[in-house]
Image 1 (cartoon, helix red, strand yellow):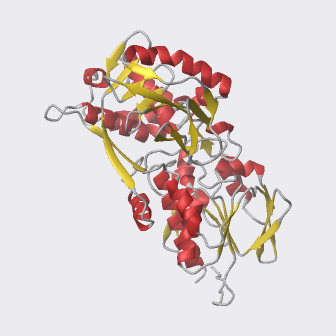
Image 2 (tube, one colour):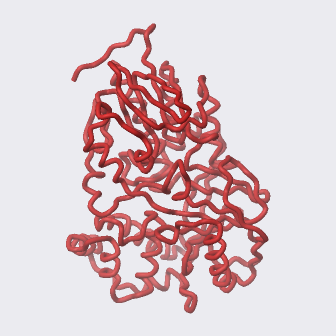
Image 3 (cartoon, helix red, strand yellow):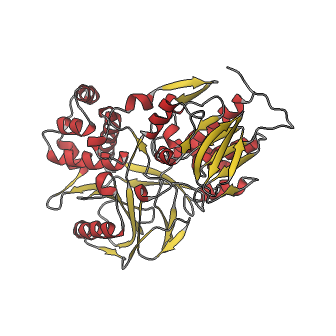
Length: 457
């Protein structure tokens, strides 16, 4: 493969499109390695799908919440410590219930009834091999227990972001992982239930992208929406919504795959088959409603309600309602309607709860905004996200899972670099086992910074 050489006086011009965690991490690392980097962002803020809010005196997250999701948080912790950010590690007891509006049971009780086969994973593999989607797997594996079917349908819808009937049957790894987690945490150890570990930042997770933004010498060009990419001679030319054209030697695209349909790629930029594969990556439709609560005698930390999965924040002052799939496509009217339907079920289970909500509003697209009542965010409605996070749609799993090695770095084949000029980062490009997390976004930025530098040697 031919390489390009740049002298110390003729450094390559590197453009990063997107100021989410992956783009900011890559920019920060490339800058540390002596490269001049310019970052262009469609929004008027950094952070992408990290969106922190303040309700009362506490903080909540309308986007990415737990840096431990999907991994142990190794990349996140390293970056946070390097930036001297104050982390908060805490553990919540796994006191969970499920209610269908008529009957309420604890997870321990429900899962304890399940006749776990000697090798559940093998059973899931066999069922998946002849199933059209993940919902069929759930229906078959838990065919004897409608409550378990309901629990894991709701759990997988929120975890993956899409209804299980639209997910590939190979997503049994997520189903098995969640079942095993629920089972392990439901077993009491010396009379104490297991706990769910969480990692966040003091003052909101937005502290990470905001700090990274401040570290960039050239700052960020906000309100710059990418509209077209073409190649002229040896340069990549990017066109933005202001008709501004910027040429670059190297481009790192960190925008979600759901936005590629809005960009005109000239035929000499991306291979058409690769571009089509990227455009076809499926995204979840998760939405969140956050609202202030006061609890006197808390019964549980986590609930699966008829529509939402709910949990409490660190100091039990903010409750999150989380939803995905078809029902996750919310506007203000539908958010209020579902919220009003769900509150009676919540109040029935938590008899001493005081729900401090007089109003509900859609979250502002700004970091650390303050709210008095309930606030919601539907990521599928966000023009610069068009979805919550990537997942494996039917028939797309094999393509997404294929990993190749480029210059000693692993990359997902679908996001392989193009002629050492176009690179890809973002949670969807991670080589970690789980897509769609804060940790996977940071990992991808770290790895792409290394790969870009290797391509210049």
